[in-house]
Image (cartoon, rainbow, N blue to C red; front, side):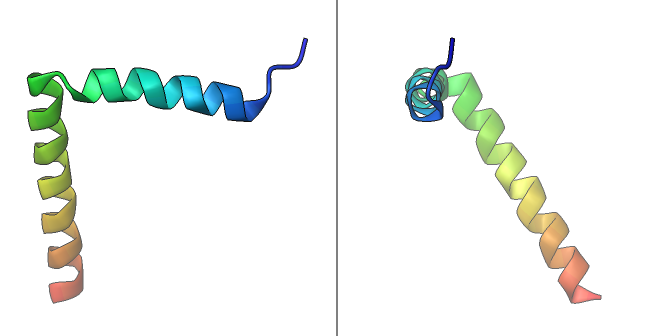
Amino acid sequence: MMISSAMLWENFLKEFRQFIHMPIMTGFLNMLTFVCVMRVQNHFAH
């Protein structure tokens, strides 16, 4: 039985949005983004 990837993707996004709305998750993502940005900046600074 084939499930279209579009349906899977939509379902995933829906779940992901609900997940994101959790404050803990938002803080975690912000921290993760910050760390990534710092690493990239350090990488290009040298």
